[in-house]
Length: 430
Image (tube, rainbow, N blue to C red; front, side, top):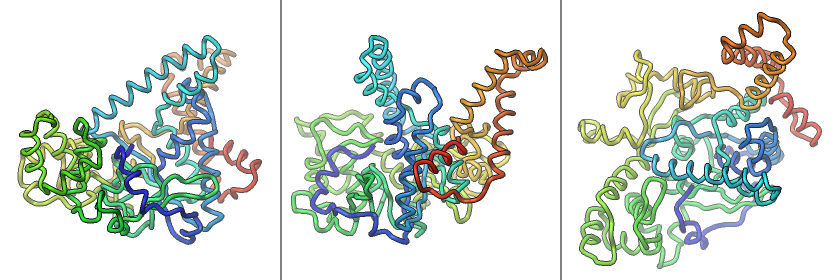
């Protein structure tokens, strides 16, 4: 979730702004970041797999704020995970599971306050939760997209394309991907901090980020640690800045550090750095103009023409669905990609991980399960009981499709006004 220690070093160029500054502009929103914020109010329900509409309420209130200021939101959700990020994802999953165990124990002995703290730490934001927001966006003509993989490069791509004018997120990684305008620390009053890439040159001499090339910036975060590298022991962003200013090439940096007694790193770290460079530059994104899969930046021909490099880069940018085979492969030539499947993922129709399955709204799914259980309990008919035992998943799926068909009949915009209106809007979506 960002580069440790980076934002404090950028304090000198962080501007206190209000969202009024972005009137009549389009801003990308990190959908999972908002879902994480929203989950604090309903952590118990999410972890214990109970229905809740509180995270949707959070979105509606935030979108209401943007609407009052005539700001057009463009919500971007994460898609599938990258293998190059397995170490980070595994660590986070372990922490969530440990927190869940502690939360349950504290809850069972009546320590509710401390239990809630650990429930919040154990929440796992899912595509099914994102689908709940997507359904709301569809009903209200709010632009959104599910990225093929990570939301960060997808949002930066939209900015490069001129489809948005800024990005609302808490993730400083965006600056490494090439974000020009990062809007962070947004509160309910519409106040935030703005970090502009154009202001890097105004940073002090002890952290001259504006003097670095894009490659040096990537080298800096790789040394200090990011989602793709473990970083080096006792090397933070300030020390990393001194190193990259002295040696511009990573191979020179590693050579010199191998000779030093106070630095130690493994061969695995060298590979992490190589993979991180690929991930920051060439991740897969979805173009909403052409409705096709592409990459954040064009992959150079020397890499494309090297089988060894292609094998490496696939771990860093993600495999895509091959046309004809309908399975994920390391396809580079866009002509061989099944863009229609990826378009359905981008629209939230197919699950971004299990692409053979329909993506189903979490709350509708739980509601359908509850209705299904009630039907079994009351024993409406022997035939229903028999069918339910044989095909429980199909039965639930049919019920969900019936609900979706009813919901899709209502396409008129919903006014986001009073709490009562918000409540009724929530109920209609979930």
